[in-house]
Image (cartoon, rainbow, N blue to C red; front, side, top):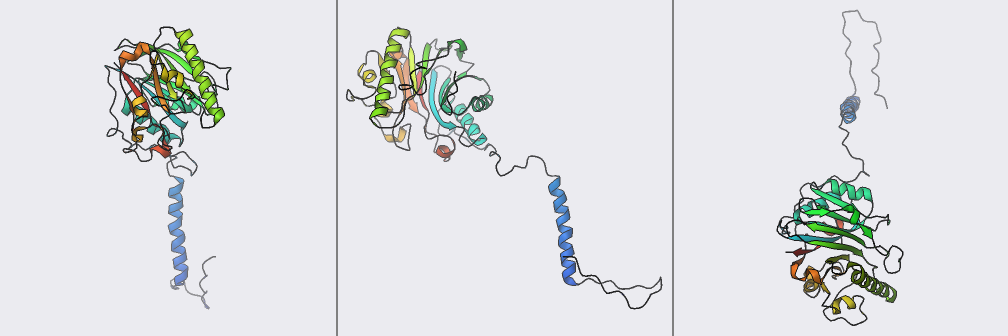
Length: 327
């Protein structure tokens, strides 16, 4: 609404005369508001382009630090970590930044990843890890892709060694395992890695599917790997016990102490404070080695980042990383 116009004088005035010009108080107030609004509008037009829209991804939180909760790896040992990073990246760039910082804090030599949503997401993470290379899944498995990260200063890796196992067996392996061969320069260890993400959940059929997967893995290792050292790691989606019943999906591995060892058995049978899947709680992420590596195993650990980063489960993953150290 326009300000009220002043009343015109009733008689002409001379050029030298002065006619007072008054605005009502409410008109002055309204005009001042408009004058205040115009500079503000101009300032908004010249704001930097970095202003985010509401639906833009969150900016990275550069204040994240895991140093107080994580003991980093050593160049004298081979450290291999399995990590289900739950539909990575859960919260876009904020998640990617946090995962990169967590991997730097752990400082392993190899990370076997599960649940990466796309190659682009994996490449974004890899770009934030200077000194690392990677191997993404050899197929597109929707949001359930596998991958590896390798520290180039210690790991020799030939991408030609990468292959998928049981690609035509969806019943046992809805996500085909991915095998690679690596060599660790400081220790001289050369080994095959098999990255797993087995069928989830309870129920007779799901348990049968995991049991079928274990039987086929056992047969593959015995017939195709011979005396080769093998590490099978990932999200096995089932707990293990020291003396499970014969109906247990992984009974053939656990009962065959001559050929196989779950390096994380002490974690699985210990306090739930260190289990890999705290929201259940349960310990379902495992690392199994064949007998060629028995004497090399130093220790196995679950990394517990939550005390240093309370947003861990909502921003990064519902799983914790589990790592093995080989000497």
